[in-house]
Image (cartoon, rainbow, N blue to C red; front, side, top):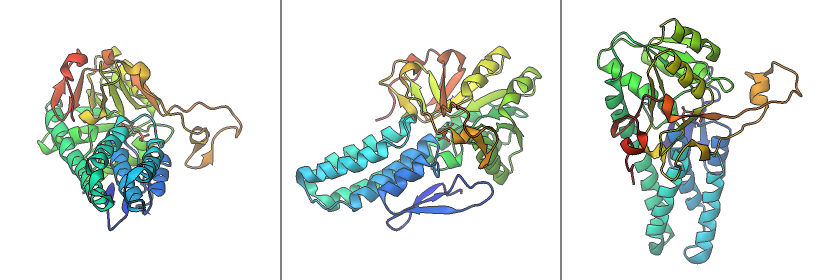
Length: 344
Ligand code: MRU
């Protein structure tokens, strides 16, 4: 199984996703600041994976705390919490994981720092373990939507690398293949960070699942020609009405899918759902630095001073989504009703 992220003897080890597929190297984080920087620099990325990383980051932060009790302990914990919270704004899973960790801190606080540290590590491991189980459940529900012989278009990387293991959108594909279905994947390259070209292609190839790389601008043409049977993507944050934030370019795919009569599925754990938001209008969209767009693979492809826009995510209105697959099952519109009350 692909080791996306692992707790190893008072440190967090992550596969360096910036270097794939060229190099398989690992980054070891010994402090919460190193974890925060790894999330910001995309050593680790993908909504559930950054939630798991942040949870372990909080464990590392708690290990370095010195105040045993009282207000100074709370203040120091809050400092660690705030640093990890500031890393990336869009994925709900990051905040969901941190909130779970904070609840654990508050519950064990009366028992002192040793008990807090033990409980936090157990909670982070539980978040990781549950994510693996959740993805298998998403796969079981979602695979029933895919027919033998289909070509699936996916975007970005919603695979093992973006989660504890197995993946969400790629989990659905893996489960369909495990059921004996012949599935071919069209992976959109996903400019500017190229998660599709670099990570999805690498993951599927390792599993022996046939994958064809296309540039993002080719998707509509292949849909029009009837070469795509279904689109399956992951999600970073889902509002109560089903509006879904995911990697930039997802919205375009959804509009093209509707225009061409291609079903469009979102696969995500319920920890991605943000019940505090009535619709997608309130989802914070991360804007990343201009060089990601000015350069490809570290090489300048335009004028070095050209103005750039680089939103990392977009919001697909619920009206374009055929169904949302979570660990609870396949949710169809109206999503406000079918998503129900998710998770603790
Ligand atoms: O910027 P990234 O690579 O963190 O964006 C990742 C995505 O948009 C994924 O599709 C999403 O997080 C789901 S991962 C299971």
